[in-house]
Image 1 (cartoon, rainbow, N blue to C red):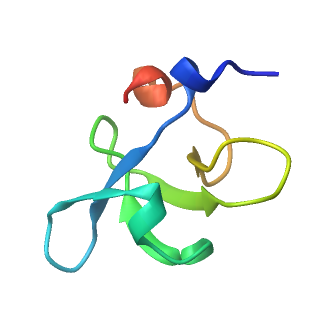
Image 2 (spheres, rainbow, N blue to C red):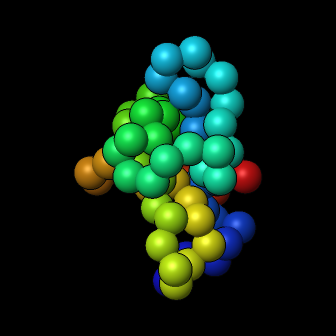
Length: 68
């Protein structure tokens, strides 16, 4: 399991190109955010077990996995 410090907590809003914290967006693909490092789509993971975070949609080797 990833440490909290390794989780993506911010993404770029697709519509207005501003930085958004995972707590400000709806869960799942409805977050409508992209990674500020690689530009790929992000999914907001907002479950009950882990800290809320973004994950890349599909496979990714992005270095952005460690941003806060």
